[in-house]
Length: 252
Image 1 (tube, rainbow, N blue to C red):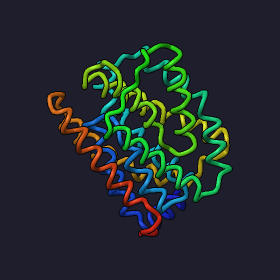
Image 2: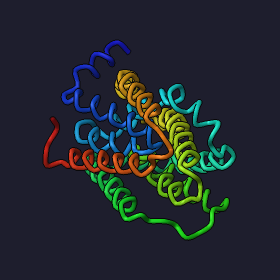
Image 3: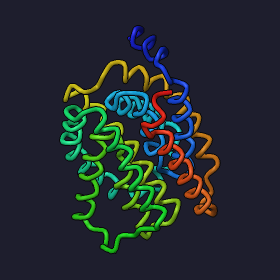
């Protein structure tokens, strides 16, 4: 592991990955979503997608300490755990795609998912169907599939949650708990399928600190009365990460 840590510290463009991690944690802490949408476009422009997915999943575990304890008491726990259970069913197919698909295809898939999600958020898309077990099954499995293939376990859940009738605090809490627990479930699934690289684990361990600092700062900034402001800032940072992740820039 010491060699893996040394290799992680020597990665070209590591400073950009650290900066993206800090921004991801900050937005996640106050908005309850957006971390992967910020991190993955930048990280996959610099790293191989499987390495970026592993590193982000490890770094996101710090949320179990920084934001989940507070969110857990505010969340709709039965519904969140049901969504999580269905997401685990979708993970294997997503990880199969991650392991088999061409690197450039995954990079463009990441950018496409982020772009479509951001566009739907900006357009104020809202679902018209009522929440049910069937809808939670579809959302959970979809989140697992997309999360396994791209590391973006949030878009499907975020669009579902933001369209709910929950207030800002509960919506944020549901999303935080689901995304953190989903990242935790992704790691053993990656290990079982042989797609958990040691250098990804080492990089994720290094990123625990900036992610934790960012998410703590974001948690203290959160105020339900400023929901519109938080979402606006999150959208702007996601858009910046999307532009930064475009392959026209090359790895920095």
